[in-house]
Length: 273
Image 1 (cartoon, helix red, strand yellow):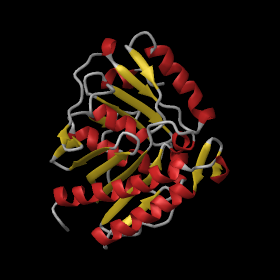
Image 2: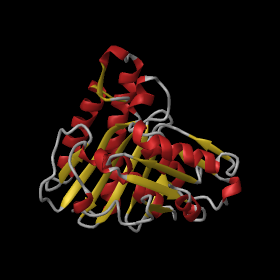
Image 3: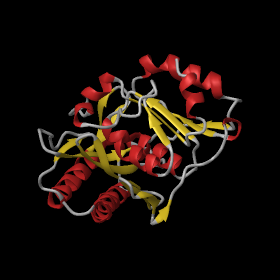
Image 4: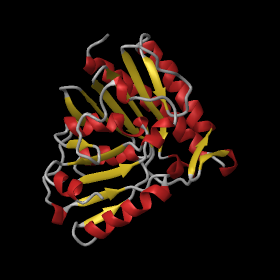
């Protein structure tokens, strides 16, 4: 395999090509093209075509790797390496013409996330990181913020599983509205993680999401000096093929993510019911 930096930069180009396709399709996109996967969970030909474009390109970069993809166009068996791909994170944002929405690609090997790339299409921002190499946006190195809770901008997302998560989000809003500087909901897990890495957000929390939503962003936050755990505070939840599952089964397992600048992380964990 190529060195991680070279491979990461090649993946950035793949993500940008997919992003260019998505951006062009958005110009003439019609709501009639939208399909409903689950309640409030949508997909279109754009997601599927983007995924095929990405899978074909990544196979050329690393033929021996398997895949976990949101739309299921490729599979993962016992391969040493595994690509984790979300071809369009923030589909609901996309179909409404509401930024941000992005392409997210990660590469895992055994217990490690080796690299992560997230390309935000509207702003033309490519966030990327490789293990031990730092985190970057359009070539500029990233670092998380150093803010305390009273000055923090939090992202508390709303996953599709509204019935299960409603008590949790209402509790979190009750705990932090007026305690932190403000709260936002942006509609893309991958972008929320990247914004934590860039210091634009101080923390992010969400549950009932797939590996494709958070895997790339997790290493970007970590390499930017932040902390990423699940709702129980476990830091190894994103790692290892044992944690990877194919298709939408991961949603029923309730993957949860808390990402922060590290300073306010424990406060968030202490307030999750």
